[in-house]
Image (cartoon, rainbow, N blue to C red; front, side, top):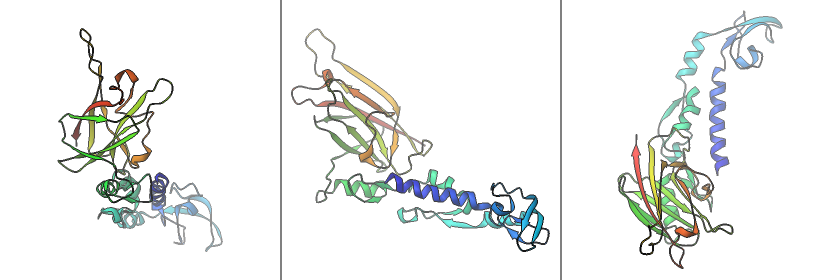
Length: 267
């Protein structure tokens, strides 16, 4: 799935690189692309000692200013138009647009489905479907307590204000120490760090009740919420709003984790 997204972006960058096409001409007015007239370096500078096939001799290629305007005016539909983006993009700006397009698709980890975060949410949570992931509603800037079972767990969190989808991923106990990793990500296809809006979060992990005369264990993390286009491929070893929970913080024989999470949205 991530390979598919990379291929779309690679194609857009090739469009960007070839936006210089038909930018040079020889002394007799024969037009060539910059790769041919510029010696294959793609910088569009032309120069002398180049061979014109039509003239049959060496020549000097010069830049054609009016061709820049033609290339700038040429627009193409966003490659993500099937996912809701209705914008037309300047031919040479396709790669830049894809880096920030809010309609970049997300992908299902367990099958070939791809679509918007909202459609992926429906796909993953359908009771009659093959996945049946659990889902909870949250509100921005309001702390939400959650109890996570001992097994590996994925919980989709949906903001009531705008339908934005987040994922709380908790791994099973690993190694002799039984440490459980916890990660919180925003589900959206555009995973670039400067994608807007930006989300920050606060994650609390609360240990079991302490004995009389002792302090209950608890810790708090603050950080940006990273983006993830494939919820099932969350990195459980690294992250921005990420923690490792020691066995001492688990509750009773059930080994549950008691969390609180609060997410804030910034434009």
